[in-house]
Structure formats: structure tokens, C-alpha cells
Length: 308
Ligand code: IPD
Ligand code: CA
Ligand code: CA
Image (cartoon, rainbow, N blue to C red):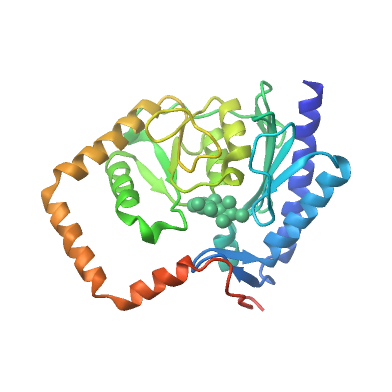
């Protein structure tokens, strides 16, 4: 216990320092690379990641690190640090101040410590397994909402959205028709922390990566939240889909997902529309070209001096 509390506090300390570093580069930042048409890498992603990796490996030379930009071990090992050096890169690159740094430690396949830091609100979320979750040192817990119509939900769209829009929009539609409101904030790590402290009541997303959810998933479960895949089976950070909630609305969210699938099948008009939209997509060569571009990974080196 002592040891994992130490890991938690260290993750928090490093996340805070990296978050301040990222913030200090804000608005003077440049996009240095594109992983796809809409998937950016900024100088801040790279600097923050180098800083975090240095801090961890100086202290624990035998620990492994999985970091978004540098990659690293994906398998379950004795000690695996899972790092998102800047979650919310698109927001960051556009000057929208909603982004964070996320660091977690997995030991033998179990996440034991995690921290997410938002440098704009100066909010540090931390958790150690079995020890609860905190925001700036104060214990946090999920909301009490029990009905979808009184719930504020949040979601995100994956970078491959253009390749599978129908499935993603069907879910968005189903939840929009049932919830009090939906937000799409642009940082999965912060979405999960906001859920953990009761600001949101539910969250779902497809296309997530381990570094998006590693720390947030522990913070959320330690705050009393529930996680699963979209079909209700066990959540796994190495799998891309996530349904997260305050626990109380989880079953209702699962039911909504099921209904959205059934009603998609049962809606012939919508099917026709879909067919039409596919035909019209065929006729749009520009869109095809864009899609092709978005598949080109890590090729283009663009210097985009947006704020200089
Ligand atoms: C992204 C953000 C976003 C989510 C995407 C993630 P990044 O992470 O968390 O909210 O919708 O799926 O990839 O690229 O900014 O680290
Ligand atoms: Ca991320
Ligand atoms: Ca990132």
C-alpha cells in the first residue's frame, strides 16, 4: 500500500510538472507532424513526453513505459507506466484550453496508480488502488443521477470517425434523445475525471487507446464509477471501446446502446437515406481524396505556426 501511494504521488508530481510545461508552450506551439489528416502531434506532445519518460526512467531504470508518441511495450509486465503526454491535442493546437497530462502505473496487468493534471484549472486528479480518488487532495465521488433525462453525458469521436460515421452517429443520436445534455469536450482523460467528480454522469467512446484511459479508469472506479465495454462486458484499457458512468445509470446506458442498434436495423427510411448518402459519397471525389490522406500515417511533416 505504502508503495502504490508513493507511485500515485510521483505520477501526480510528474503530471503536474509536465502539464505546466505544456501550458508554457501554449499558443507558441507548432504542429510538427500529422499521424493522419486530423491527428496532430505538436511540439508540446513531444517535449512533455520526453520530460515524463526521463523522470520515470531516471527513478526506475528497470520499469517499462508505454507512451503515445514513443510507443513502447504494450504487453503486461511487472511495471508498465502508461503515458499520454498531452490529451486533447486538437483543442491545444486550436487554442481551446481543455487538455491534460495523464500518467498511470500498471503492475502485472493491474492499474495501481494514476494521475491526470489539467494545467488550466490547476486540477490534479489522483488515485491509488483501494485508496479512493482525489481532486487537489480532496476525496471525490460520482454523481447521484439515476435517470438519463437528468444526466449530462460526454463523448468523443475517434480519429477514424470518417471511416465509420454511421455507428458513431447512431449512438450519439440515441443518447441525445434521452439525456439532459451531451458534451464533446475533446480530452478523454478529463472526461473521465469530470465523471469521477460528479460533473458528468456518463461517458462513452469508441477508438480509445490505453494512454487515453489508463489513469482515468482507476480514478473513476476509485470514485465509485463503473466501466464496461459497450455490450456490458468487462472493460480493458487495451480494447478501444468504453462505456463509463456513475454506476447508477449504467444499465440505462447499456439499454440505450442496444436500442440504438435494433432501431438502426428497423428503420428502413434511415437505411434508404444511408444508401443515398453512400451514393452521394461515391460522387464526391474530394471526400475520397481526404479519406485517403487521413490514412497516410506519420508522413507529412508540416510546420504550422498557428499562433506565432
Ligand atoms: C484524444 C482525446 C479525445 C478523444 C480521442 C483521443 P489525444 O487524445 O482524448 O477526446 O476523442 O479519441 O485520441 O490525441 O488528444 O491525445
Ligand atoms: Ca489521448
Ligand atoms: Ca496525446
